[in-house]
Image (cartoon, rainbow, N blue to C red; front, side, top):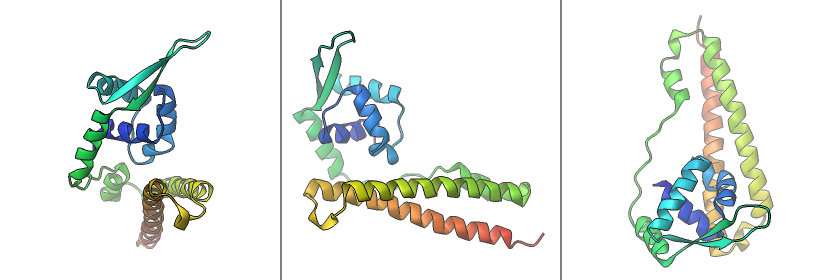
Length: 180
């Protein structure tokens, strides 16, 4: 997937300025597609030049004018074509797993501390996902089609975090039980 697709999907949900898109991106698509604000602005310019988004200029008092970006028919067609192609598994790039693979070269406590650090991060992310589910999807069976797709995406994140935490607990227990 390219950043352009993530931006187009986000703009389908709600036309936005680049600033608002970047902020919203952090709390939605940003959970599974990482991009800096600078990358988002750069990609918006390319999408606008290609005719996949258009920008309405909004005059502001005491501030520079801002652009509100919306997806064009061309942008929707790009998304539809992309969504129609099978997605390949994303390659896994994980610093923790590389460290763990070679973890025998450091004292066990180093790897245990690293696993504990990650465990805390994943617990926090799981709590965040559960809060989003409770706030925006209290009755999953009553969701609109759009809401259902978004809910399913969130459920994937919840399952991922739960699975990761199960693995992490196993890894910590295994390392603690290693003979000295």
